[in-house]
Image (cartoon, rainbow, N blue to C red):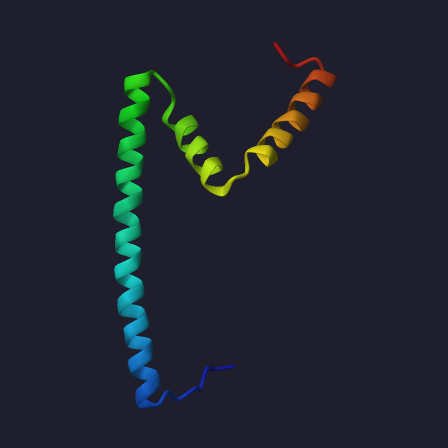
Length: 87
């Protein structure tokens, strides 16, 4: 089934504005993400840490999901201990 909606001039103007502003926001988000990755990488190198671990810490802190991540790890640890695969 084909999409047959016909937009009036006001709707077209709103859609153009949305797409233009959305495009600008996405470019800004990309730039901020790039800056964050570069900062994480630099600090990781200075502190002899893995960038992926630092980035995960940032994301967990942002989402306030430490307990959830801890519970997942606890479950994983229990499974590995049960099968004798821990150090």
